[in-house]
Figure (cartoon, rainbow, N blue to C red):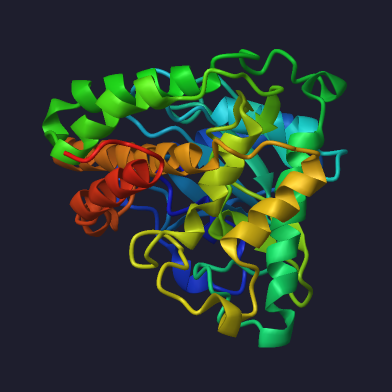
Length: 367
């Protein structure tokens, strides 16, 4: 997921209500950006105007306009950052490598690692026109067409996982083995270390269970998105077709079924926490059932064994809860990027409880 709820908002040019003046705490040297663009962006001709997207729990995101073109700027937040977090350089790298594949991404215009330019590293990408669906029921889509949108998501994540990382120069993008083990370790350590956010008994139970329950078999390493949700995609203005997948901050090499299970948490997620389908009449909506959706993905990627799916769903709920916990810590420390952070973290206890319920479904013992 990332903590961003989300950069997805950035591309929907039809929803400019999501664009606001730059918040005082997230202002930067716009003249420095203008100079950098003049020197590094082909075809750039100023002046520039900068506004901010309301979304972005993790990395502040801005709309940069010139007389000829609009861009999206993603930058690291200011202040002390957790190791490995807010990796905007990795976001830009993977999008650039995917540009000529079947996975649709926004064009990258430039990456700046020099923190002296605007205060943090950043990258600039195209503003892609289309629709963002913040509700997993796709309420603005006709019932007869709705299943096609789910097929588009299913096909796109399968296309991503089918890419051989070395074929596009991403064989060194992450370690080829140990993805789940590393994720559990890193998120657990971050959770424990973030004393500002406090502890949750269900999170503590999950940490104790996950390491012992994790599958020991390794899958073929695939490029994983890490936050593949409907509101991190831009759909064609009128067609059930994805024109850009957004928010690649968590992308790495990892276990493809874990990545898909994270995406499929929508079937068990209440909509007031993250875009979800829990409690909805799936048949009435005309979307595939969770079982059908998993089977379609497995067929597309040639996956014969999905026995670990429930574990990976529980693991995914833990990841989301850990991210919310991190947002809470930043809120307490006064470094949260989004004004909606306080509202989001209210759901943390419920989310942690739901995560433990998924662990029980995957075989965790009763307390």
